[in-house]
Length: 219
Image 1 (tube, rainbow, N blue to C red):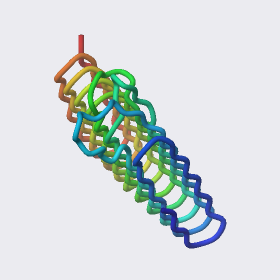
Image 2: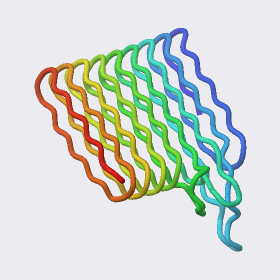
Image 3: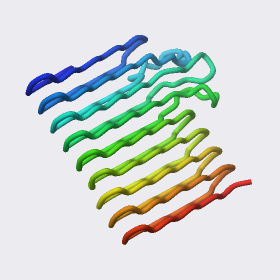
């Protein structure tokens, strides 16, 4: 469903396939919300009910926010079933982009989850996931922050929390079972994590001004 309160808000919703849910709420002026869902399934085992294929939710409170969620892909062998994406914006001029699919891992469902919360102003977040059981959780409670998350493979998780101003965080993970956590407070800190292969763990906590960290792990 779509609920709008304010002036000059735009909402675009496109769904194809079966049994997907989409929700858009806009309170304020000049907000833009876009949801595109086209998800393919591996056939259900005989006698099993067809579960919800994809769920997308956008909530925008403030002015001139932009949020886009795209969930797609899947086939008879690489199902994209059971993906969930949530974008919550409570501020002004924030931009959130979430893209999820599975065309890499043979599985009966994908189960990817992405959640982005932007509570300040002028934050930009991009999350892209391709695989199975990938989880990205982003919280941006400051201003002018930047987050980029790219995950492929199986069972990896990224958690990023930003407060303060001008924070920059990038996580790239491929393989299986990787975990990255980035916590940033203060001003103008930069954290970059790249993890390939399997079962890598990275934890970064930055508090202050102008700190720079790069972590690279894998074969």
